[in-house]
Length: 347
Image 1 (cartoon, helix red, strand yellow):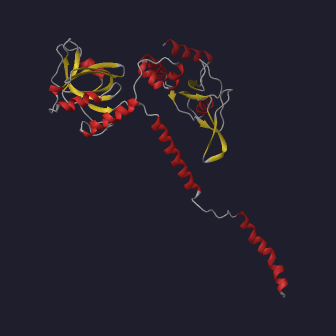
Image 2 (spheres, one colour; image 1 turned 90 degrees about the vertical axis):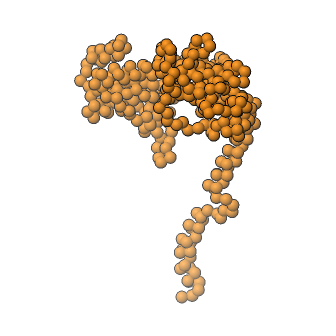
Image 3 (cartoon, helix red, strand yellow; image 1 turned 180 degrees about the vertical axis):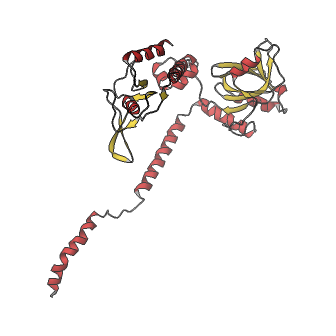
């Protein structure tokens, strides 16, 4: 066989070997794509931190300076300490119930109260009155330099007075007592512990609708009545749950994320899971079909309270995410369902 014949025989095999080479990715010089992504993320975080630093308020700078000075003087070991279990710790509401109705108050036991500082009044360098709030209940704490145990330097006490601010969360340990005006208070016998400092000022008032909607937590701090809606919803859900459980209904939780959204004529929110990138998933628009499947499966009296999602308009009475309650009772007539609904609404 000549050399030319050998080349003709080998040519198809050489083409077959060369074909995969075209699919080979070109040689990459430099960091890998994953490393590049990590570097980009690190640069983005650094840029974000720099932008955040530029937005630091003067109040926050002042607080950080004061807290740093207090830390150097060993007034506290951490600005956000881990709470320790204490048998004498109680809520302000329970303290008011147990002690404020006693005359004179039982001052033989130490009590620890935790809360957020609502106001501060200083009388000279040796006496501080703080009003603490916890779950809308308030109590006044009296911090007197001469009552501190163990005794401390006056300069350290003055620094503590400069350190605490309105909005700080603190813990006061002391005994029930009366103020000079006859008010029941908690008299501190140990220097109060700083649990979490407020690094931004709480505004005196908040009325701007956009700010109120975007910063609901601040709105609730400034306008406590805003939280009444959440409390009312909690009580209503407890009432509904108690009603159905008394009637031998079973409370269930059905899937929120599924392949198809059914049970109502509404546009769903859609997404994709990383494990199934080719499948489109939907947030449920109603729990109806899942509850009916449970009835078919043998659960004859079921109910559910949970979120539903509909990708539609927003107005004063419509929200894309809302809480719904549905119940199903097998072997019940229309009159039976009407009776159940009426008893739920009328109580």
